[in-house]
Each structure stands twice: as structure tokens, then as C-alpha cells.
Image 1 (tube, one colour):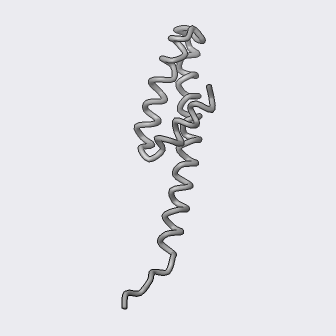
Image 2: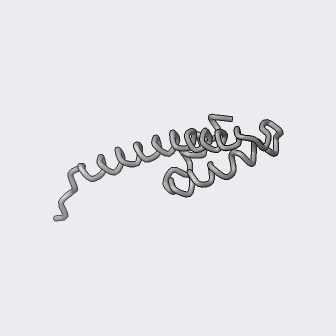
Length: 81
């Protein structure tokens, strides 16, 4: 399940704020629906871990995006005759 959340962050890393918010809301809902967790104090911990996992994917996405943008910006441009 953790790789799923990291993949979610990788795919939707462009919209990182919405991705983190969605992880905080939907990850505990998924765990509740699957009876993996109950309505106790561990629900907040599950939300925090969901956000942490998605933030890893978002960080990778944003890093790759930054590298690509800087590489493209530093390429010499062809001169028009």
C-alpha cells in the first residue's frame, strides 16, 4: 500500500498541495473501509503517514521537474538565419 501512495505523489506531484490534502483525507478512509484501522487515535497517525508517503512521491516529481526545466533552459538555442 505504501508504494501506491508514493505513486500517487509521483503522478499528481504537479498539484502538490491538492495531493497532500487528498492523502490526508482519503488514506484514512481507505484504511477504515478495509477494516485495517479503527476509529481511535491511530487514525491521525494513518493520515500523517499517508501524507508522508505522498510527499516522498511529490518530492521526486518536483525534483525531476526542476532538473528537466533547468536542462532545457541551459541548452543553446539555434540561431535563425
